[in-house]
Length: 139
Length: 139
Image (cartoon, rainbow over the protein chains, first blue to last red):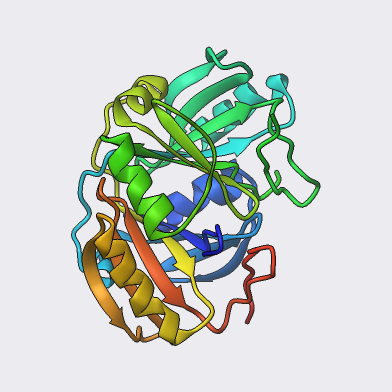
């Protein structure tokens, strides 16, 4: 079976509020949008932000507590971590952990998007990122 | 800012139980594992399954209800959807929605992993998948 994830779909409560975080905070450009969903073309997969009620109906499950999860966006240098966390906080993010050095090396912080989905902003020198944004296990 | 997601980290309660779903169910091969985390090299990003307590401590936030989310694994044909859902159910998955046709076309079902993280198994003829597993907006 191909080791492949096609889409990450995040349930959201308010499209404009979420869009502001991703478009103005991260600076990402939607590839498609309508009144209930926004799609972003990412590195080999799609990110969708979809009204939570519609997602729950599609999954046939109410939004519920799962074991928790986090998405990571890696940046090319240690110095790039905190400014991006700060920028995301300006556009609706809620800081969880300001940047610091984890035991396994590198540098990282966490911020939640306006719908409480956690993002880690990290500099991880062990994992190369290609010009296309493809991330690989490096060591 | 590069439109790039480096890692999806799923909080899990039991490493062996989760590993069975991903390794035996999906048939994926870990690139790294230790007693608290398993990493899989995916299509341009990493998937990590990490003990939820460790993830919560790293995020400095308890696992909590977010707006809900789903990961999707797309398959090359309509006929491949239900057999994969059934196989995942055999290895610890909980069926949420057996395969059927959504209003926007294609064919899909949903199954939760042993830690309640939802996976959509989908055939979406509008979104091409490259031989390397890179998924793009097609129409």
